[in-house]
View: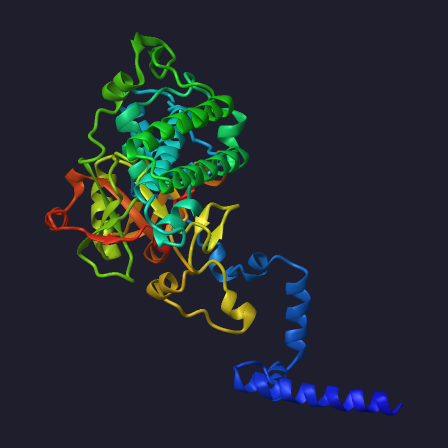
Length: 466
């Protein structure tokens, strides 16, 4: 008994010392915990809210009924679109969006009932180029220590099915394009996770081998020869999962009634020249709205490209109103645009609506959520997560935008696969827009002459869109 009492005394002393230590070091002391618990009143209202919230989807409970019925689908200015694409369980939104921009032009130019590019064809070459980008990056950093920031970033990001407009420019310019029926989707192009995991695992293994060989004095030329063999392995894995890209094909152009217009033999490069033909590297400019960085400056993201011999992602940072001016100009000229945003915020998927007033989380939770866009970026609470094709704007009698519409790549759904966003949502969660040079203002063209400010590849603001 005495021994037990002595043990209990020591235990009590330990708890007291532990609480004191926590209080000194910033931990929750017993006094602080009491204060925290007393701040919850446990009123009848709180009890009702707790019963509702613990048994239901928060978003369904937070729907703002005062705002729910105010849903007008009319648009004053709209680029016509036909059909809808579906990226399925893949992160290829950047590719679907970029190709949808050119798809709309082809449909309009040739009066087609619909047209689809082969996303699988372009994706195949994207994955091979990204594999080479990683392996060459490993060779370039062979003399750096394993804990170097760039080496660490490379091994964390050997391959991705996500991307942005630089990938569209890099891959289409180099490899051309093909119609959808020339290289159809496969299970693994629609469901990329397992394929990507296996190729990434192999690339990391290859990366370690290259570093080990470099450490023993292997010359760069010999390392690059080994890299070619490694890419042969990746190529085989891609063929097994996606199929082999065609070097040439025969394709018949048909009008809106399905009648044949012409039948020709093409290569993917000649098809690109005939049906797209644009210089994607120099004829397009990416605009960004990032209030955490200085506006009216040109920025470049280091190593952020899809091909080693491609171009780093470069953009002009602008206030949202400047971007809207050029977006409206493009829409009025019947030209869709590559657009990316933080699609998961204030999003009612069933109605295809993006509206900052749609959910009232503040009333439900009894607190405010007061960070602005700059603060959300700085705290990693918001960033571009998905690319779509901007196609419409609704202007009021004074020419000010009320709402916008994008063509999505999630297949048929609300609004025929298109999403509608309020102008206020556009301000808060739009991040990137790619326009043709002809719609850029003189001020933007002057900024493009600046020497870009280079930002690191691992900056969290510049993750791939999927």
